[in-house]
Amino acid sequence: MPSGLVVLTDRWQARRPLPEVVAAAVAGGVRWVVLREKDLPRAERAALAAALRPLLAEAGGSLIVAGPDPLDGDAVHLPSAGPYPPPTLGLVGRSCHDRAELARLTTEDYATLSPVFPSRTKPGYGPPLHPDGLAELIQASPVPILALGGIDTPDQVHTCVEAGALGVAVLGAVMRAEDPTQAAATLTEAFRAASPRPLTPTSTNPHGRPPTATREEGQ
Image 1: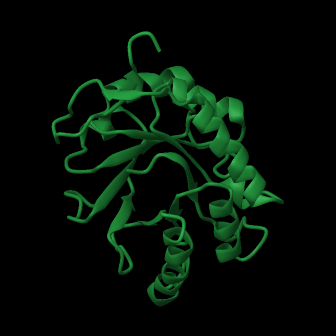
Image 2: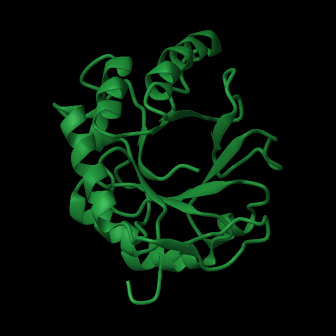
Image 3: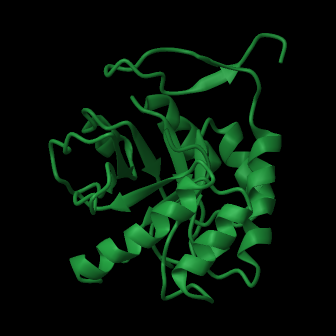
């Protein structure tokens, strides 16, 4: 299950070739990457996926592909618009933005909620959920949630974890960074510092998975 710092790719915003940026992010502690680059022809996108997977696998990480085509892998992240029902794969995520979209989830393993904060990557997209809105939707979600959108600082990471997010997904904070390794390490450490330990499931969702985790009593 994706958790911690999850990086979404965008080669147009990256300061270096995408494999170099991903390798740098992995060196900074990233273990989950979502390959976007939807404008590429399938053959080029599949070749890029094949180049990125070993970079993550060597560190015990995984590549998730945006869209219904896993590009010879077994993990996808689907848009809110479809397809429904989701494909049967090893790991399936879905982009969500409100309570109605969360209610449409069926067999997905996790979802993103966005935008939490105003986003430089998608200016004007929203309105932002802000921490209170994020926390409210996480409570309503049948699956674990990754916070997404405008997350650039350790304080924002901490706020998302406090709201109940299993992880935080970032794009520009790593893609645009002069030093992706340092950027990834800073946000990864912020997540680790903010994460409650130990974790225990609070309830089971309709698919048999715990949607959130909370502190043990006294923690």
